[in-house]
Length: 210
Image (tube, rainbow, N blue to C red; front, side):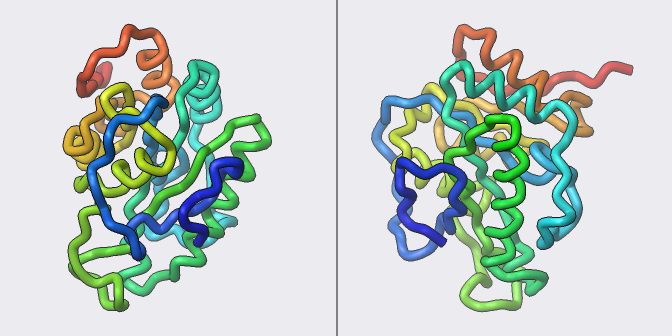
């Protein structure tokens, strides 16, 4: 895993909690959208560790292009407890991210970096057993990305399909938008709301239409 990220290279996988001091950043100058991975960008398949199983969700490319064209830095932040549980190793996480990145680059979508946390308290593989500030709903991954990419968290969003994603955003100091089965909306819907502006610190929980 490359660390820290080279700013002229996109799409790297970053192990957020390895040999770094997790600290709350001072404000940077760029706005970002932090993106959950499973169930937000790709079909949620439990403990996905094989690139061949990657499927981009409908509307994702449209939404990412809208956000990118609006000037947002796109950063993926994902919990990957499958490492701690022994289902796959950190290299497998990188290979999955490489495939996601390859598929998105075919549509000119540039992901700045993929940050992940492999820890879990119920794990069985050291050194990943235990709690970690990087694991969402902790803010650690967002803080590390903000330092690396000079992100102003007060002008940034997190989009995810679980409330713990929005809790991580709240803890880090950014706005949040819930997508997925609970709300019945996807990334394209979130992107249209985000780019419409003006920016307001908020947490959006769309209501599913019956």
